[in-house]
Amino acid sequence: MGLLARLIAMENLIRVLIAKPGLDGHDRGAKVVARGLRDAGFEVIYTGLHQTPDMVVNAAIQEDVDIVGLSILSGAHIPLVTAVQKMMIDKGVKKPVFVGGIIPDDDAKQLTDQGVFAVFGPGTPIADIVSRVRQAVRR
View 1 (spheres, helix red, strand yellow):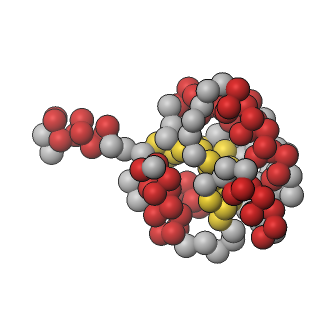
View 2 (cartoon, rainbow, N blue to C red):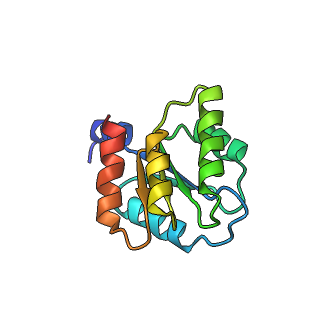
View 3 (spheres, rainbow, N blue to C red):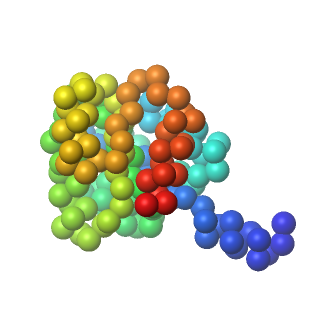
């Protein structure tokens, strides 16, 4: 591949931040999604465990990502996602957000009603996540 083709490919590369906000210490799902997105050709930045909403938003800014994925298994998805969204607004970050974890249907609806692009539960095929992330970034 020539230099111009590589530059064009890099320019079209989708950059995804996968973050684990809160005190949840279970990151297997986040790592599976991160690897699946990476295998599909995305550039993935994984923040690691125990991130504050401020840390997540600052990482999104510093890494210049196209989309933010939050993995939450602690049951604190509503307050954590709300805090991340508020901080994104406060800092002028206009990027889509998706959430993964064990999230009841009513809470998933609340999250999408407040602007979350998609909510993925356990067992969601990686191909579905890849497709929806591409769709979110194209908007």
